[in-house]
Length: 404
Image (cartoon, rainbow, N blue to C red):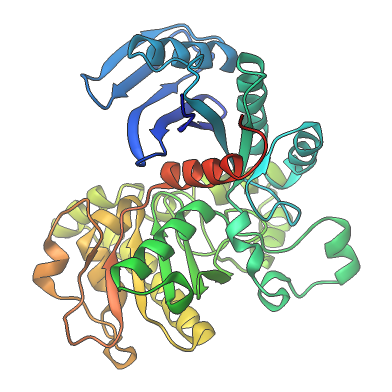
C-alpha cells in the first residue's frame, strides 16, 4: 500500500489545529481544531471531507490528551494514525533562525535547536515543541518533519536581513530580521505566478498576508528578498493587536517616563496595540461597519492601517525594480474589498489599479481584480499554509530513504 497521507499539526500554547491530506492528489481528508487545552471546557471540532462536522466539549488536560482526541476522531472516519497510508507528520514551527532553511526531519539535534530559539519566539516555539514530542510518542516509527515559518525568508540578502546595530552584539544575541508567515508567502507567490501563466522563477511578486497578524514580502523569481516582520512578528505592518513599526525610543520613553516594565511594554505592543489599540476593535468587518456609521476612531484606525500598507507596497516596488503582481491573501486580504481598493488607490503611476466589479466578487479561487489594461496585476490568492506544509513534508520524505 502506498504511503501518501500527511498529517499537518499546528500546535499552539492551548490549541492544536490539524489537517490530514492525501498527497497523491492534494486532497483534504479531514481537518479540525482542539482548543482550550488544560481547561475544563476544552472543545474539539472535527470535519471529515465526506461527512458531517462533529463537535464536543470536555476536559482535555494537555497536548498528549489533545492528540489522542485527534487520533480518535480520525479513527472514527477510518483515517487513524496507525494507518500504513500515513507517510509522515508535518509540524509548523514558527522560528527556525538562520540554521533551518528548508523542511527538516526532526531528530534530537533539531529539537535542541528549536528549543535554543525559544528566547526569540517565546510564545510559539515551546508549544511547537510540545506538539512534536507528543506526536513522536504516539508514532515513534513515523517521520516527523518541521516546516519553519522563517525558512522562506532565509534567502534575504544580508543588506535586508541585518539591523544597523553593532555586529558583535547582534551576532552574540542572534539579532537579525527573520520574517514569518513564510509558508503562506511561499505558497501565494507560486500560486500568483501560476495565475499569471508564469514559472515562479519568472515572476516578481509583492505578497500581502493580511490577517490578525500581517506581513508583506518582496519575492523575486520565487525567492524572498525582503519581508516586513523582523526578529519577531512585531515589526512591520499595523496588525490586529500589534503595533508594527515603531521608533525604538518609544520603549525607552515608556520605561523612563511611564514607569512601565519590559513585560508591560511587551504586552502593550503585542496585545493592546494595532487596530485594537487605535479603536478598540481588531476585526476589520466591525471596523468597516463602524466607519459606515460615521465612527471617527474607526476611520482613523483604518487610515493608519492603509497608510502603512501602501508604504510597504511602494518600498517593495523599489526593492524589486519590476513588479508583475501584488497579491492579497489571508483573512483580511482575501475578504476585505475595501482594504484592497484603498491599498492601491492613487498608485496608478506605478501601474496599480483594481476593477470595482472584479474586486467585489467573493470567491475561494485565485483571481485577478485588476483591469485587463493594468501594467501590474492585482490578485486575490487564498492561502493554504497546511497544504504548503504537507507538500514540503511529503517531498522531503518521498525523496529520502525514510519511507520503505
